Figure: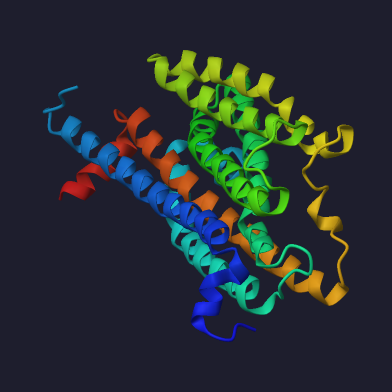
Length: 57
Length: 249
């Protein structure tokens, strides 16, 4: 369908719109799971600290 | 019947935690495979649209994000209400866990819609019924998140959030039917897209694959966040202690 890679990236002249939409979607969907996992790791660490009796918040 | 497998079994945060831990690798795998398939079909199989050119390819993330953001809102209101009425801890935690993901998908739908509207309508934004009611959805999510984080008392925070979520739920049918009730720039329901059949088929396939990918993603990330909330709230229980001890050992 696309003659070349540059034709693909040009998106029929709509590159700015298509890639801006996809880039932001991708960035957010990469960031959110990382933040959620960090949240869970932090919660587990806090629980461990409470266990050691060094709980300090 | 095994008494440990009643419907309420996973209402116990410890059981929920274990279930989420078991499901999450599969959900992530499904999200990645489905997204790869959806993007392949969307960019390499689905043809260029006769009227919109290649700008229409934004639909493959725009529509799934919009659908999911509305369903997540209803799920959030449902779990918040259930948590409030039945005092079910895990239900309230799920409601809280859903909010950021719902807000994310709402933002994605607004952002991608804007970048689709500019080349097709000639404007980034218009204050019409669909766009305005959908912007309110983003504010409802942000209000929910701000409200729960502003109230230190967990039980009170859950109750206040449930009221907000339930009142805001009235906005969902308004968004959905806005394109029928009012004149709007926004096109009607996507599923009734009337194009050449073969064309609509591959476009529809890409959109459905992306929708399932987004669903798998949403479940996985909401489960992870709900696990974090459960660990925080149940810090003084045996199951969290043994988890934390296992981690330290």
